[in-house]
Length: 297
Image (tube, rainbow, N blue to C red):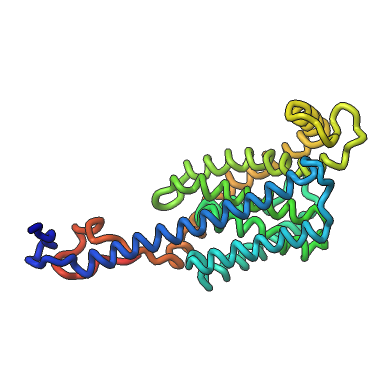
């Protein structure tokens, strides 16, 4: 007859601390998977919205596109709340950051070329809080900004997804972060700011490009093959947007370089206050002994 493993104190049953650690880890994995699936599903809807004209179905109606754009933000937020990855405090912080971002954009609506200060908080927030939160921050910031500046139109749902993907990209990059933010984190985020400055413009041009069917050599025509699509879009982007987007890319890098570290440090401190992490006893064996509970942070 087999014997049950002993927990180190003569008992044949796992300790309460072991069960608590296992349950905490299992719950954390389940919440992470739920959030990741929600982000993937939301992004799939966004890709379908952008690709809709390219499939020969014409341009979605403005009301339909706006409903989809606002709806996916609400659904993803509901998934995050249901998975307990977004609580009342995190939601309040999301609203505050989005409001600050909208105010920054309202102060410089037209920007300098394609530059807009709205991406600083989206990049920093995503980097500290993760991809799901970064997507919500980017999408919500654009929605609030549109209401504040009167920028509601058929382009808004596309901006919502594009800005959300900027925040999600920052969150994916931030997974490597350990400890307090440092200068190397700022350098990485500045480089991402350049990439997203061009990427945001390219993604938005996919929607804008479909209105230039009459332009020879660079316009979109239904039924074009993949090679023709790529060639025409590349010409369209270089002619209409490359210089404009360069202002956004450089502006993102400059803002992150000068303001990124204090913003990252402040957000990391807020995250430490908002998040409670239950560590397994084995990770803190040197800090306690006997049946004393391991620390929470």
